[in-house]
Amino acid sequence: MKPTLCKTHRLRLSVAALGCALLAGTAHAQDSEKQELARLRATTQALIEALVNQGLLTRERADAILAQASAAGAAAAQQAAPDTAVATAAPAAPAGAASAPQKVLRIPYVPETVRKQMADEIRTEVLAQARSERWGDPGALPDWLGRLTIAGDLRVRGEGDYFANTNIPAYDYRAQTSSPAWSPDLANTTADTSRMTLRARLGVAAKLSDQLDATVRVSTGNSTSGPTSTSQTLGSDFNKYSLVLDRAWLDWRPLDALALDLGRMPSPFYNTDLSWADDLSFDGLATKLKAPFGASGDNRLFATLGAFPLEYGSLGASTNKWLLGAQLGGAARIAGGVKAKFGVALYDFRKVEGRRETDPPPSGALAGTVPYFVSQYAPSWRLKGNTLIALNDPTSTAAPVWGLASKFRPFDLTLGVDIDAFAPVLVKLSGDFIKNTAFNLADIEQRAGVTLTQLYPKTRAAQFRVDVGADAIHQRGDWQAFTAYRYFERDAWVDGFTDTTWNLGGTNYKGWTLGLNVGLDRDFWLGARWTATHNLDDGVRFTDPSGASVGTMSNAPLRIDVLQLEMNARF
Image (cartoon, rainbow, N blue to C red; front, side):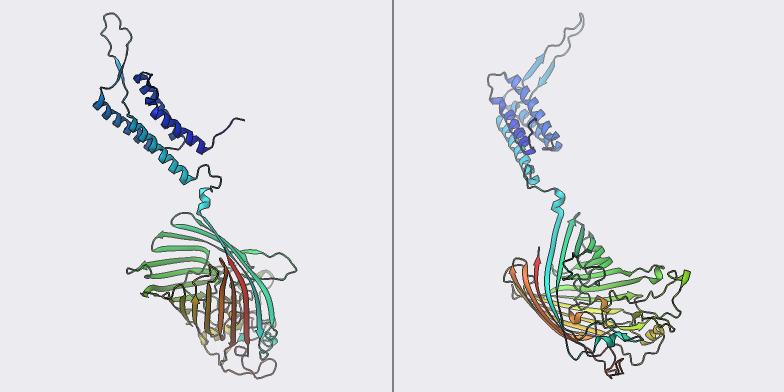
């Protein structure tokens, strides 16, 4: 087998040979100067050409080196001696013909100092390129790998859910068959439970250019566990668990002030978990604008517009459900250690409200070809709290199919203040207020096909939260403490998109939470949290299905406490 030379060895030999060639003019004094200079010029040009062919030297740099050498040699020759001329005899001219002019080869003299300078410049340039491209380094990675960022996190949680003995039994909720109804899916309201859950997420972000990023993330969970949680309950006889596509989106920034997100993305809005749960991902398109102002880099105005499909019907665009959102806001440093931020948003949940069917379900050839129950609020993602109406036709005796009673067009005001004057301890204050502007009793009665007496609008929600400690847990000894109070009326927000720690998800409650995170090692921490909630009472009384006068299922007693202990790791 013929020996081979790596790129680094070839580079070193080429540079060494070039240096020897450039200095060879003084090493062999016994050769005639004419022959030596001719050989030197030819060798130098050949080596420079070889460096260009191997990609070790650019053509532009090679031409510049030769031009520099010629200019320096000509200047030196004019000062020292006449140019060396080598005359070559012309062939004998025919008799009577004029003598042909002699051909003269002029070789400029290159001083030793210039030759050494040229060698040093070539060596420096080529070695710099070798270092930047990591020639000969066995640990060097391809260029495309340098544009990738891999990140993930892992959480193992133990959770205890504690139900008050005064709660109404779950069968009272499940016995509801007519409009209005609340939380008809509840299966347990009195028995304490505990479980262990796992959340694992792994993402890859690719920087395709200075203006375009692509990100993909997979996580635990499944398509039937609802949109707001990526946790997997452990305990399935040691069977394996599935991974799902949690996020996949393009972030394109064609201008400094403009960004477009397309695909399945994190929330593009400035919000708290009162509106959008932390684990929720958005499907669709979002456009984000920003406009800095003032001298501080923290000062800016921003706007966000988004369109997100919720559900595509199989019978045309008239049955498609969408979320449209728009937000205006700003951020500014209002004092030396104080930053403030606000956002005003309006969301429109299109065609999510229920509409009662007037005819029995189609049968025979018509089944599946005409819209029916297309306004259903699917059990796979509804939680509890929203007012529901039965969608079955008046003659139906089948199990009820439920839809949302109210339309949803919530206004959302979010405020935040960060105080870093006590660094490294950071204080964060946040507030969130929601008002559903689309609740209309006459519209609900028209779609429900029945008269609904004493169905009052309960359309407000608010949350106040305080965080103290490190901005994020990175090192051993870092800590965070937080507390929050929340008030959430039943029809302020679509309950299927709410956080699942508070009241185990849903709306129609008030309560508080208290938590602490402590760093145990680098990007590894222990967390503990206690959350206590109970339902809201609107004072409307009637006789429930069991015969006891307790009021509507909306304000039936339901108190839930949740304890969470968890270990988190980030990488």
